Amino acid sequence: DAGVIQSPRHEVTEMGQEVTLRCKPISGHDYLFWYRQTMMRGLELLIYFNNNVPIDDSGMPEDRFSAKMPNASFSTLKIQPSEPRDSAVYFCASSPPGGAQHFGDGTRLSIL
Amino acid sequence: GEDVEQSLFLSVREGDSSVINCTYTDSSSTYLYWYKQEPGAGLQLLTYIFSNMDMKQDQRLTVLLNKKDKHLSLRIADTQTGDSAIYFCAESLGFTGGGNKLTFGTGTQLKVEL
Image (cartoon, rainbow over all chains, first blue to last red; front, top):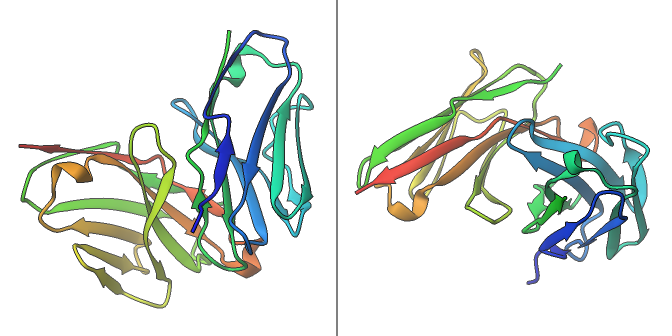
């Protein structure tokens, strides 16, 4: 079975550019989570969705960050404009109700 | 609030047992998880335990839960070089706690030496 699929795997862009990260959850999973991982702060939950609806976005750092889930098989995390301090590994995870979260391989983002 | 703590590093010799420890603060935790992260990869679910259990064994992995002390441990028997990775402990309030939202520890870097 396919796991959580994230794209791109790596992204390098200049400060001020718009960045869009993509995620395809495991089919049948109702929950989708976006995380950010850095050496300084570890794993941080940014936002999560249930049945395509955002439930808790309290972890989204600033208005420059936005996330959408237009359907059950696709979600995006957008940063506009990007800044060097946004450099991190961004993970998407999905889970069935009450079940364990399964993670994608992440997108390594570098903002120059 | 929720807080999960782990020691940062552990070094063991190949063939020995590894014990990775974790403490948590939320007594309402329903599930406790162990994830493994290899370099350049995502987090891989290793095992989990319900809060009403004391122990769970899965091949080389043994999870022990001390609810009174809010202490969780992961024992890896016959540790191999392929076990070198970062291990994350995570707690959850379960489905009623908001979609099984997880609170992660800082991760323990396990280094297996020959």
